[in-house]
Image (tube, rainbow, N blue to C red; front, side, top):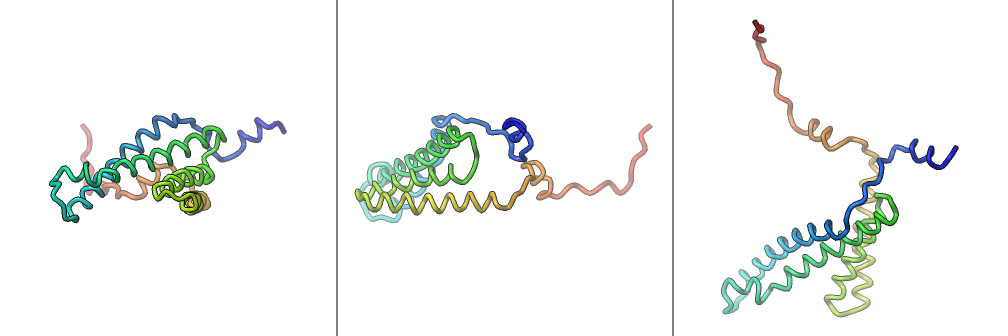
Length: 161
């Protein structure tokens, strides 16, 4: 049996390549939104004389940090997936390692960066792996139909004339 025939017989869906820069930009914006919320909370709970601008001037590094972590994670995950032509747990582990390394670098410590890489890489890779162990072949639309109630049938049918 040829290699092409083996690939077509498998139940895995075909790989869909994505742009790492586009995906990282999208996640960076979402990370910046989360960072803005956390920065606002930090600003509100702190005692200072910066006023509302303290969200940006005093605790604004939180916004950039969350955006950078999200972008590093998604860029690495997408790049590795494109290179390997597979969607599996190793992609998430590589992305988690990149984000964890960046988090460790914030503390200006190489051991913390390596530990963050190992911890976040194992955590996200394990999470992705357990999700793939379930073996669900159900599509998003099938899950949606199963989750939401369908309207009951009419009690009396009106004959069409």
